[in-house]
Length: 169
Image (cartoon, rainbow, N blue to C red; front, side, top):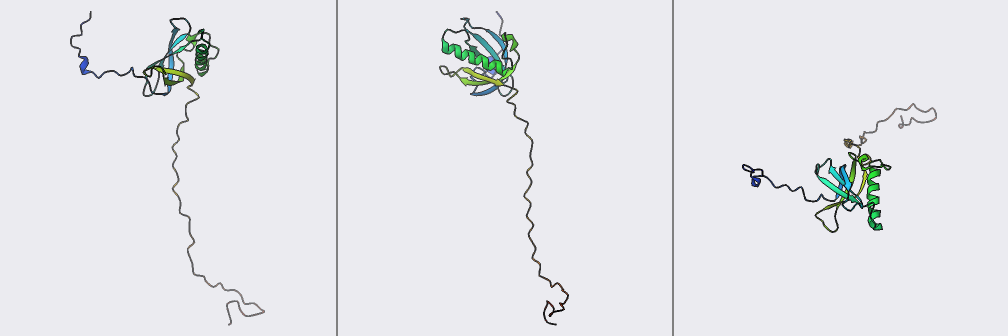
Protein backbone atom coordinates (compact mmCIF):
# COMPACT_ATOMS: atom_id res chain seq x y z
CA UNK A 1 0.00 0.00 0.00
CA UNK A 2 1.00 3.59 -0.60
CA UNK A 3 0.40 6.16 2.12
CA UNK A 4 -1.67 9.20 1.20
CA UNK A 5 -0.59 11.12 4.31
CA UNK A 6 -0.26 14.80 3.48
CA UNK A 7 -2.49 14.61 0.40
CA UNK A 8 -5.90 16.31 0.69
CA UNK A 9 -8.10 15.84 -2.41
CA UNK A 10 -10.71 18.23 -1.01
CA UNK A 11 -8.31 21.13 -1.60
CA UNK A 12 -8.10 20.39 -5.34
CA UNK A 13 -10.77 21.23 -7.90
CA UNK A 14 -12.49 18.06 -9.14
CA UNK A 15 -11.51 17.00 -12.64
CA UNK A 16 -14.48 17.12 -15.05
CA UNK A 17 -12.69 15.65 -18.08
CA UNK A 18 -15.15 12.78 -18.38
CA UNK A 19 -17.99 14.93 -19.68
CA UNK A 20 -18.59 14.31 -23.39
CA UNK A 21 -17.31 16.82 -25.90
CA UNK A 22 -19.95 19.08 -27.42
CA UNK A 23 -21.22 18.30 -30.90
CA UNK A 24 -18.72 19.62 -33.42
CA UNK A 25 -15.55 19.05 -35.39
CA UNK A 26 -12.22 18.53 -33.64
CA UNK A 27 -8.64 18.09 -34.84
CA UNK A 28 -7.58 14.64 -33.66
CA UNK A 29 -4.59 12.34 -34.02
CA UNK A 30 -4.90 8.56 -34.12
CA UNK A 31 -2.73 7.33 -31.24
CA UNK A 32 -3.68 3.65 -30.91
CA UNK A 33 -5.70 0.85 -32.45
CA UNK A 34 -6.55 -2.65 -31.33
CA UNK A 35 -9.07 -5.35 -32.18
CA UNK A 36 -12.44 -5.25 -30.47
CA UNK A 37 -12.98 -7.90 -27.80
CA UNK A 38 -15.15 -9.86 -30.27
CA UNK A 39 -12.62 -9.46 -33.12
CA UNK A 40 -15.41 -8.00 -35.28
CA UNK A 41 -13.72 -4.65 -35.67
CA UNK A 42 -11.11 -2.17 -34.59
CA UNK A 43 -11.09 0.21 -31.62
CA UNK A 44 -9.47 3.47 -32.69
CA UNK A 45 -8.12 5.84 -29.99
CA UNK A 46 -7.64 9.53 -30.73
CA UNK A 47 -6.23 12.57 -28.93
CA UNK A 48 -7.69 16.03 -29.56
CA UNK A 49 -4.59 17.95 -30.64
CA UNK A 50 -5.62 21.61 -30.40
CA UNK A 51 -8.29 23.97 -29.25
CA UNK A 52 -10.23 24.16 -26.02
CA UNK A 53 -10.36 20.37 -25.64
CA UNK A 54 -6.70 19.67 -26.44
CA UNK A 55 -5.53 16.50 -24.70
CA UNK A 56 -8.98 14.92 -24.44
CA UNK A 57 -9.47 11.36 -25.68
CA UNK A 58 -12.01 10.03 -28.18
CA UNK A 59 -12.65 6.47 -29.31
CA UNK A 60 -14.39 4.95 -32.30
CA UNK A 61 -15.29 1.36 -33.13
CA UNK A 62 -15.10 0.35 -36.77
CA UNK A 63 -16.91 -2.99 -37.00
CA UNK A 64 -15.43 -3.98 -40.35
CA UNK A 65 -15.77 -7.76 -39.74
CA UNK A 66 -19.27 -7.76 -38.22
CA UNK A 67 -21.83 -10.29 -39.46
CA UNK A 68 -24.63 -7.69 -39.30
CA UNK A 69 -24.59 -5.96 -42.71
CA UNK A 70 -25.68 -2.57 -41.30
CA UNK A 71 -23.00 -2.63 -38.58
CA UNK A 72 -20.38 -3.69 -41.12
CA UNK A 73 -21.43 -0.97 -43.57
CA UNK A 74 -21.18 1.70 -40.86
CA UNK A 75 -17.76 0.38 -39.79
CA UNK A 76 -16.54 0.26 -43.39
CA UNK A 77 -17.65 3.85 -44.03
CA UNK A 78 -16.08 5.11 -40.81
CA UNK A 79 -12.71 3.45 -41.47
CA UNK A 80 -12.78 4.52 -45.13
CA UNK A 81 -13.54 8.09 -44.05
CA UNK A 82 -10.50 8.04 -41.75
CA UNK A 83 -8.23 6.56 -44.40
CA UNK A 84 -9.22 9.13 -47.04
CA UNK A 85 -8.95 12.01 -44.54
CA UNK A 86 -5.45 10.79 -43.66
CA UNK A 87 -4.64 10.61 -47.40
CA UNK A 88 -3.86 6.90 -46.99
CA UNK A 89 -6.78 5.11 -48.69
CA UNK A 90 -4.72 2.00 -49.42
CA UNK A 91 -3.12 1.56 -45.96
CA UNK A 92 -2.70 -2.11 -45.06
CA UNK A 93 -2.07 -1.66 -41.31
CA UNK A 94 -3.61 0.76 -38.82
CA UNK A 95 -0.04 1.63 -37.79
CA UNK A 96 0.19 3.55 -41.09
CA UNK A 97 -2.50 5.88 -39.74
CA UNK A 98 -0.96 6.41 -36.29
CA UNK A 99 0.22 9.98 -35.82
CA UNK A 100 -1.88 11.43 -38.64
CA UNK A 101 -4.03 14.45 -37.77
CA UNK A 102 -7.54 14.62 -39.21
CA UNK A 103 -10.78 16.41 -38.35
CA UNK A 104 -13.33 14.23 -36.51
CA UNK A 105 -17.08 14.95 -36.61
CA UNK A 106 -18.14 14.31 -33.03
CA UNK A 107 -21.68 13.76 -31.78
CA UNK A 108 -23.33 12.30 -28.70
CA UNK A 109 -24.30 8.63 -28.66
CA UNK A 110 -28.00 8.07 -29.30
CA UNK A 111 -28.40 5.52 -26.49
CA UNK A 112 -26.05 7.20 -24.01
CA UNK A 113 -25.69 11.00 -24.33
CA UNK A 114 -22.94 10.94 -21.69
CA UNK A 115 -20.62 9.46 -24.35
CA UNK A 116 -19.33 10.64 -27.70
CA UNK A 117 -19.42 8.98 -31.11
CA UNK A 118 -17.36 9.89 -34.15
CA UNK A 119 -19.53 9.97 -37.26
CA UNK A 120 -16.81 10.65 -39.80
CA UNK A 121 -13.54 12.32 -40.66
CA UNK A 122 -12.22 14.87 -43.09
CA UNK A 123 -8.77 16.07 -44.02
CA UNK A 124 -7.16 18.53 -41.65
CA UNK A 125 -5.28 20.14 -44.54
CA UNK A 126 -8.39 20.95 -46.58
CA UNK A 127 -10.29 22.62 -43.77
CA UNK A 128 -7.80 25.30 -42.81
CA UNK A 129 -9.32 28.64 -43.61
CA UNK A 130 -7.03 31.21 -45.14
CA UNK A 131 -5.58 33.62 -42.66
CA UNK A 132 -7.76 36.63 -42.18
CA UNK A 133 -6.40 39.68 -43.90
CA UNK A 134 -7.25 42.86 -42.07
CA UNK A 135 -9.07 45.22 -44.33
CA UNK A 136 -9.33 48.91 -43.67
CA UNK A 137 -12.37 50.33 -45.31
CA UNK A 138 -11.85 53.68 -46.92
CA UNK A 139 -13.81 56.47 -45.34
CA UNK A 140 -16.42 57.92 -47.66
CA UNK A 141 -15.11 60.94 -49.48
CA UNK A 142 -17.44 63.87 -49.86
CA UNK A 143 -18.40 64.38 -53.46
CA UNK A 144 -17.22 67.79 -54.53
CA UNK A 145 -20.08 70.12 -55.17
CA UNK A 146 -19.97 72.98 -57.58
CA UNK A 147 -19.51 76.33 -55.92
CA UNK A 148 -21.93 78.81 -57.40
CA UNK A 149 -20.10 81.61 -59.12
CA UNK A 150 -21.75 84.71 -60.40
CA UNK A 151 -21.68 84.75 -64.16
CA UNK A 152 -19.25 87.18 -65.68
CA UNK A 153 -19.53 88.78 -69.03
CA UNK A 154 -17.08 87.52 -71.53
CA UNK A 155 -16.13 90.13 -74.04
CA UNK A 156 -16.80 89.12 -77.58
CA UNK A 157 -15.53 91.03 -80.56
CA UNK A 158 -18.25 93.02 -82.29
CA UNK A 159 -19.69 91.49 -85.35
CA UNK A 160 -19.24 93.41 -88.54
CA UNK A 161 -22.88 92.77 -89.46
CA UNK A 162 -24.64 93.97 -86.40
CA UNK A 163 -24.54 95.39 -82.93
CA UNK A 164 -22.14 93.99 -80.37
CA UNK A 165 -23.41 90.86 -78.55
CA UNK A 166 -23.45 92.66 -75.18
CA UNK A 167 -25.91 95.16 -76.19
CA UNK A 168 -26.09 98.47 -78.01
CA UNK A 169 -23.11 100.68 -77.88
